Length: 120
Image (cartoon, rainbow, N blue to C red):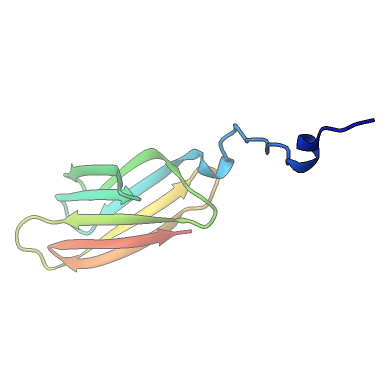
């Protein structure tokens, strides 16, 4: 019985996975931003994409937003500014991914804070 040479010397084409990996899927994440003073303006972004931006007239604001949240955690770029003359101010960001525990971080600064926070 003869077998074509092409069949013996070539490898089969690998199967391509069509499904998106579950680690790349966005999950709902609850975020709470609490400032030592109101009003304040803020922006929270991840990988260059703005997740939440606004002007707050109260000390505590919250929002639910979908984002990719791998088990290794995420880096959130947080910028907060207080108008006028301000003493040392603080802002706390609490992040709660769906079906997971809350994690919170605090930043301190004068008139403005601009930093990256890593959430597990």
